[in-house]
Image (cartoon, rainbow, N blue to C red; front, side, top):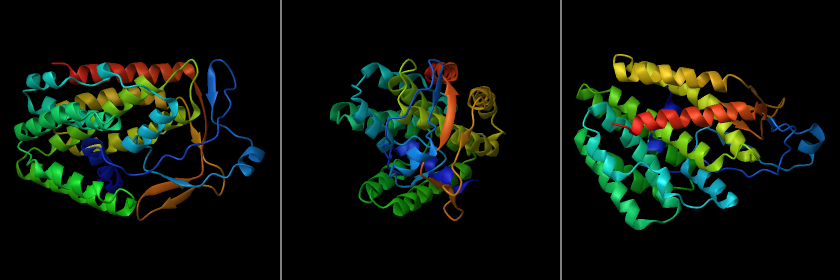
Length: 302
């Protein structure tokens, strides 16, 4: 199982920082129906942009927070999965999927410092964890440690990796290993849903938002490989088929890195790049957003 994706998976669940988003200069929309992040070589040469790490394009809470702040996106109470819905998640699969979803919702609430709502979602997360027989401290302990080491990416990765292995081992000992895969899946679906619903304006797309959504192409490929570990669970197989359908939209475009700009850190299994070139149609963006909404609606439904 991929070590970095394992780390990224728990980040979705416990809503913590992995890497900072580097803001870029505004880039050109080249037609009404096509969006491109391509910059001419001369423009790149004149733009001092530090290289940043891409952990398979994961949409992290801090990254999303930075974009929300820059775009002045207001809090939307209707975007989250209501805490009342948790009472309906009686099966282990539904509880696991929505534990991942509530974890991402918690990170959204933290962006706006809504303490009363944060408390409600923490209670729900604890309730679903208990329903799945996951000790609460498996989630709360790493969160407390990570919040004290937010500026140290290596420490965060180490803590997250250790925490996920702890949860996965616990579930495996109780013959419920697929629960971990469903938690990851739910978190990824929610992160994509929130980002495409609140941040993506397909009529006037923001370059950074488009690139972050496009980079889910990498995450989705890794997620599909990750879920192969749990094909003995029919629920995992069911959602994998849906992810493969979503993948068709991501396969409509390619992402290119400049020569000598891409570095591969094989030890950490991350990509380091200054930027990427891609051209994606607004139709594809619409399709990704609409299918993400459809998948999320089914996941939170009874």
